[in-house]
Amino acid sequence: MDHALVYAHEAALVGEVPVGAVVLGPDGTVVAVGRNEVEACHDASAHAELLAMRRAAQRLGTPRLLGCTVVVTLEPCAMCAAAMVHFRCERVVFGAYDPKGGGVEHGARVFERPGCLHVPEVIGGVRERASAQILRDFFRQLRARS
View 1 (cartoon, rainbow, N blue to C red):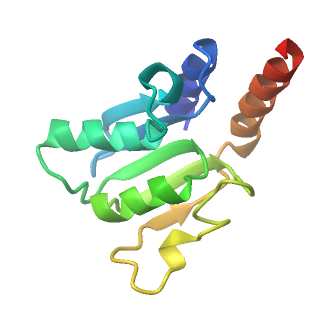
View 2 (view 1 turned 180 degrees about the vertical axis):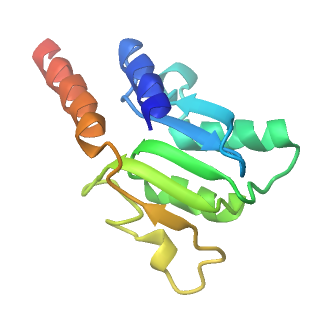
């Protein structure tokens, strides 16, 4: 999670919502990383975990991330959770919970839907305080500028 937090901080520095993600291979090595790039790419789907999963798939040369763990600083939204299903990630580890936009423990609860093709192991709340703090700081500064 520390590695993902570094990328979240980088996102904040360039004006992106501070979310960072890391994909770990089955052996625990870093395969790919990502941070939100929504504003830079003018792409609402450029979420940290989605970018990291795409990069990991490219690097591994496969559309499935079998045995891989996605570590992300914020509870994945429904879009990213659905992508995790299709990438067949083995495990999802996230930091801060997202009662408004989350799609794992909140909202759509994608992995609990009937007919979900693949259900990864989910571990939430890892470094929750640090993950939530960077988000609070970012949005406080954003409001102060408005």
